[in-house]
Length: 305
Image 1 (cartoon, rainbow, N blue to C red):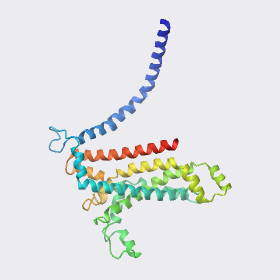
Image 2: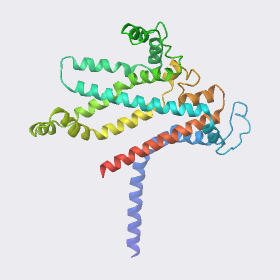
Image 3: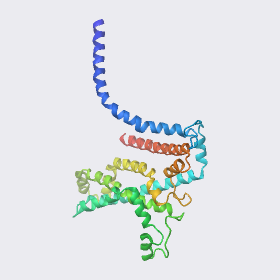
Image 4: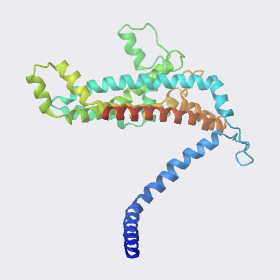
């Protein structure tokens, strides 16, 4: 009996040594996650519960509980930024996905110079957002902008619109610019998904008499579901944190009409130097992204079941 216990202990120790050797390969990744991802998030959460400004950043910092969160919820600038972020993200996602899907279907067909046009479509995606923002700022300029010039020539408007300095058009201008930026990414992911679909399923659909519209709704869309879900979630996360494009084009103005949550947090941190309030806004953004991610995981789990 004693000999058996000793053998079991030796066996477990040898398994532990083998396992610990494998787990050692995870240490660099865990260290990276801890230092560059988990620590900043935890520090941001702690900061949001304090009262840290430029006057006491090196002095005594008081714990204020949920006061920063309550004050932000009462802040008009925060509520406007939240509304603008919702509109900016929602409309950008809808149009980026719809136009990207149509282009993906188009480029999925074989025709001469298809690869050349497909490569040209990616230009918008590879250009830095700051440069794209500067280009659109010029295009939406008042009397000298090409957008006003084209609209006047085709008779849509009679006089130039001050797109970026008018409260009614400033947010729409940034949304249009962001849609243009995001279309290539949507097209690329959906095109890769389309090209991975098996041809024999379409052949079977044709033999059963399904027309192109029926094949799209009953074969293409169901088989692309997982690709569409992950594309929409990635698009939401990417669009929800867009900051540089709006900073370059309107800087959130006029009168916060085009301000979004990332820009609102930036202004709190680096214009008014209220670091805790900025961390609070980042905390709200983190909560929203977590809620969307949980919704995505539940959706995927229900599809798998």
